[in-house]
Length: 419
Image (cartoon, rainbow, N blue to C red; front, top):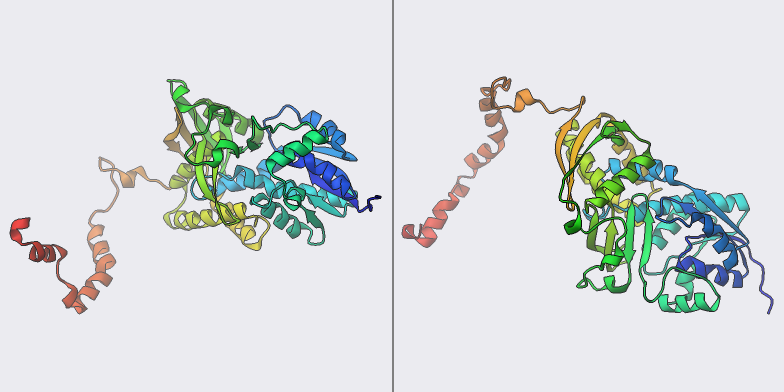
């Protein structure tokens, strides 16, 4: 039977199981598949081989584009400025790359005159939501397909399909993990990790050593920030890629950055996730601490509230929403004074800040000290306390029936001897 030709389709291609089996399946549906691989810092030496692999699987053309600098400047640094961690733990390494993927898909589709784009996400993950919502925000008229979701194969059936079509994939029954990695971290799913009782096996990790096996000596590093962005390590200026790679290596060797959590997925169920994010964990901690001496109390309070919302929007695929645009504008405004150097100790799974200095610090030793040189006017505290406590004092004067001391109630209830 002759298959109706539907036109060009851009597939976000990683070379993994899901996208590798998607190529022949989409081809069978009548699409001329163009594979698009985005280099965002994957821990892989096979980027040069991916194009050939895609063509062998049936793609009519294959692009490999290096988006590492754009990924960091457009997504990673804004997330760092926002101290973005989903549910207080996850640094969003995978989530941050999805709007980047959507941007590249739409760019390539418009360049090639494609009728559709596609991704390799299943119907259970949040990546399908992130990519499709972002694609729709960038080009509402383009169709977005999800072949793995549509055909509803299990991972085992995908492996069988790959074998039947002579497609080489890294995922096997002996190595069933679903891996996603970039400069900001590594995500590990599936296999024995699906049971929260199971301890992650050593083979699941690649960026970090077991903290108990980390060196017995502390590693001290000094991280310099300008406008909220790290620019130097130990006084040496570095570009963004070099700095993140340095931190991944230094923190990873100290066992920093392992995360094992059960998170609430956007699609409505809980999922056990294991992450390795050595650079992200260390840099977010350093940045957060620097803000404590460079931002005012009210800005810090408001920023912490918006940090939670920022992380949720990034996680939920709302990167290109009006609220995200407004939130990023606020974050950028706060970062103008976040300059200085943080001294951090890396030791057996911990990244601890033990020193900070900044020319824009609003910390005053002269006001904080209890020693000689104290300039705080302690006499002013008397009037401050009177004014600060006036609303409560006035309330109590009016509502005298509520003036029973809690300790008196306790004595009455238990008797004086009980105390």
